[in-house]
Length: 528
Ligand code: GDP
Image 1 (cartoon, protein in one colour):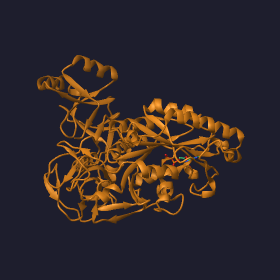
Image 2 (tube, protein in one colour):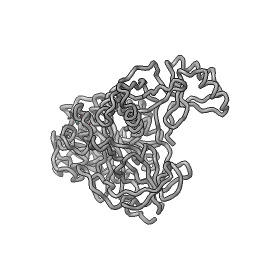
Image 3 (cartoon, protein in one colour):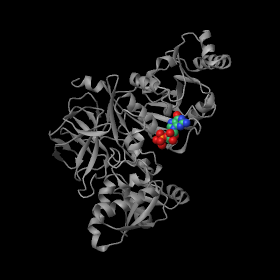
Image 4 (cartoon, helix red, strand yellow):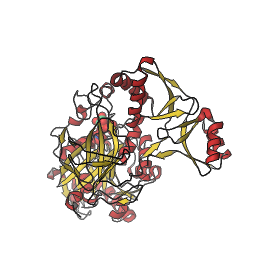
């Protein structure tokens, strides 16, 4: 393998969680370990600073939520880690789902007080679709959380994920005393705001019957820990790394991100077991990361940095071979060769122009409108990477032009924004109404704001009575055409010309599914 060394030192992953579980805090601790930032609080304050790396949009600052998906690259123990950030806000969940197609594994943060929450469930569904390896971090152990056995059971049941604890906590809340590392048999004692690497807080206890345990945590907790560990050892045994890599078993760590407690244990294990860039499916064949020839795909397009220039950054995940600056690559959809003179890499807080990139890397390509989500670049071969999902939106509104003089700008704007994946655009059959489908209300505000500020086009939205979009396929083209004609008001095509049924309610949808056995109703459309 030509680039074996480069490939084997890379790990590309994302941290996912329900908002407020502690994703940002954990990200920050990872960056501190990686030496990418020096002070605690740096990541958080980025959210509100004017020219912060992950802050491209005015609206993001106004609302203090991380709309953008950004990339942070740092090194730890000779491993090059690409951490892809994802917006926590549910209205931007689609962005997160697409980002998950660009990673090789994830760390899932669960709040020990709240347990499994809505977003956690959905995110795990996406991971399951791709058998993405998952490590679970149970956070906020310094708070009075749920009973730890109950919590594990809840996660296993709700997320349909088999767990395997690698550390085990001693109590929680104000009685939280630390975690016992089941793997290397050491006890990590908790003091608030500790640095997890401080040696004096770590005690090696190869044999749990050793009296040193009672001395450190007290008789009662020592007895409890012995009991717990015996139980856990009996139930779980040793972690089979191949089961983790196959997405079947998720190692679990307990800790407190804000206190930087239990984080290093997880990061070290991550470095040891997390997958390096893997093979990927395409429309033509499986592409191996180790192939000599370059290939990669666009999973995210970022709004312009400067509204006056309307330029964008397309995020490309390198899947095989070597990306090189100024070399011509084949844009499969446009069937043309293009080169990039200023590709960016994302070193935690600044962007640097890079000369080359390897599988696992995510680079930013300066774009003036060549790209849309799912586009593939190769060294000449024609294929698309598969498995980039487009989910049914949940809110539908008609796009109404408020300024007839700006029709062109509006058209262009909405086309570009939907290429970016901000929303989905459907055109009603017959009526030619433009219908925008989003996952959340907030996205409509973003669209309205951006159309006005970036394209000078004013628009309004008129609510439409739909609740779901289903992509339609059929082996009987006549039946499909008839259906679309009869159901004109509820029929539309998506941007790629694929027919879609817009259902008013679950009842209508079920009725149509029953009445039309020759037609298949799909709830997601893979872009390729
Ligand atoms: P995100 O929305 O998932 O990115 O969550 P944040 O990292 O912003 O954390 C949400 C809140 O939980 C913040 O107020 C954090 O200070 C707090 N938090 C994070 N980790 C811990 C922890 O280990 N213990 C406690 N008590 N609070 C935490």
